[in-house]
Image (cartoon, rainbow over all chains, first blue to last red; front, side):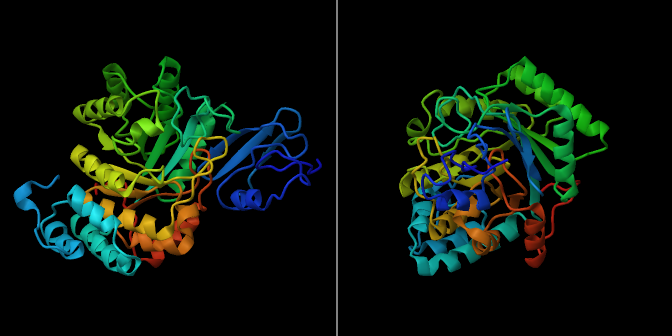
Length: 64
Length: 342
């Protein structure tokens, strides 16, 4: 799966500066947009992790 | 307990007043006194946090209540709470999702494994329908069948009396329903229901014998006067627990560009709420990671906080639970055991 879109805001990787997005993803946010197609994902946060599912590209989850 | 006029200390320095009125007598600060705490200069924050910590230790004890929360039904909420990424009225990236029963049981198990004694099941709804209540009922049965005796709380929006009774029958021991902000500011935050409707649900919860958990969010454009108003309105409710959140400006919500609450303002709020509510469980909830970072979290724990949500929140992530449990160990704060009541 290629990383063409930002997981946080869904915009193209080269489109804008994603520094603030990276900070949010590092601190308090799970991914919301598929990095391959920018679709909004269905995200379930649980006390110890999260899963995020794209209807086309499948599910990713947290390591923790 | 709300202070009666004859109980209010007439001295001028609010920190001195807090020592005598709150620490010695257990009488919470008045609205005007809370406002004074919120207006203290930065170089007096450590001093007021120390008093707030002493108040917490004297009137609540050293134990910390640890809780985990999970979203059973995420997103698609018909209400327009302007801070919330789960409202269906705003272009938030949060999509609707339901957690299944095995997922709920797993989340409760993960929470219990941290040493937590509370597990709160939350749904983004105006109020529960039959399907949601049925899911909660089945979920609680499944959690018990898993051998997990963690105490279960719920947060399912506004309730009818019949729904309150159903939750009591399910064994739900505490219900969360936040007033969110001062009564005078509430119409700026929510327009689809009223502060008074929320209050009605809280009254029914109390009368049914469930513990009342009611707090709110700091940093939603309220003035310091309204922050003080809110603390005293909460005190008049006499809740068992007050979760203190700090605004997370989430994308797509009307508050997405609001500033994060500054650490010193947040610490003044922690102290002020403790001094208004000397006997209440005061819980660090959402937003502390953005507002405080690691160092500030410790200052808060030493400034009147005696409960904490560990792990992730509903749609945002928290610190790994182990980090907070280690922090409590470093601070020599024992975690409340399952059989205890704070």
